[in-house]
Amino acid sequence: MISRRALLLGGLGGLGAFAAAGGTGYALVEHDVLPGRVRLDKALGRCGDVPAPPAASTTVRRLTWRSAHRRTDVTATVVLPAANRSPRGLPVVVALHGSGGDGASAVRSLALDHYLPDAVARGGVPPFLIAAVDGGPDTYWHPRADGDDPIGMIVDELLPRLRAQGARTDRIGAIGWSMGGYGALMLARRLGVRRTAAVVASSPALFDSYADAHRTNARSFDDAADFARNDVFSALDALKGVPVRVDCGTSDPFAPMARRLRGRIHPEGSMGGGCHDGGFWRPRLPAQLAFLGHHLAGR
Image 1 (cartoon, rainbow, N blue to C red):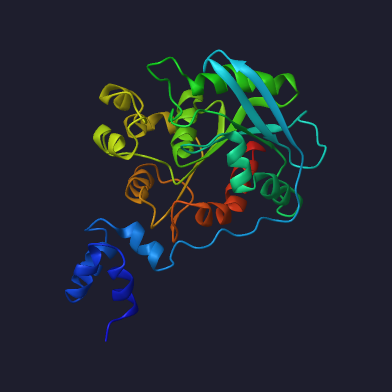
Image 2 (image 1 turned 135 degrees about the horizontal axis):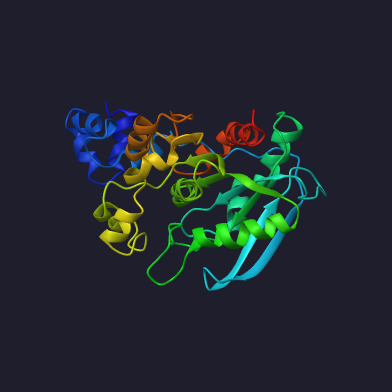
């Protein structure tokens, strides 16, 4: 009798042949010896569904300007912790989106305008604002050879604009997903321990080598030298003293590199069941926002 596993594997191209061979191929994929773990886990229903957000929502404002560092128009989608709350006196968390996205899509897809007010009103999290800013679809949040500099835009343009509205930007938090998870670590590296209250990297897009990065996204780095200059693992000392949280799904293609990072810096967070999607990211937002809020408040 053919098992459910074998039937599922049969629908995954070449993996079906391994399933027919006494389950040996299934075991190899299951333990990451062979490629296909992510497709396998999706087929077996291990990725989870995207949960509905909390019912409450809050005020969202938009700041748009012509960025000198990015040489294009940039918009920051600013999520406030309560309806009609002013930015005055609020600490800041910069949110960095993933590849192909922008600030508005990060707020929309992750329902940040629902999770933040719920964390503050019902979770006891000290209030702060989230500024999700456009970093470009594939800049990977570091200075590029064509002159595009999204990190410079955050430091020299976004934060001063928020400060002019009364927000507190002396020490900030950062959170990002996928490409943005990598970017949040790079922003903390740029600002250093004195200006970084805490950083959350959710399923960070980290690579073992330039060749690995180029295979995944040919636009992620300009060349091998660009990768070397901006490799998170080459400058982990810059994160010393910075509270860091790293979460990643065990069925995420970036799971091996997330495990390596966790083994090097021993951050908060965890590896848990899930994939590279909102089904993994949304359920972790309450704990991640609490982590950021309490560190911003000095607790």
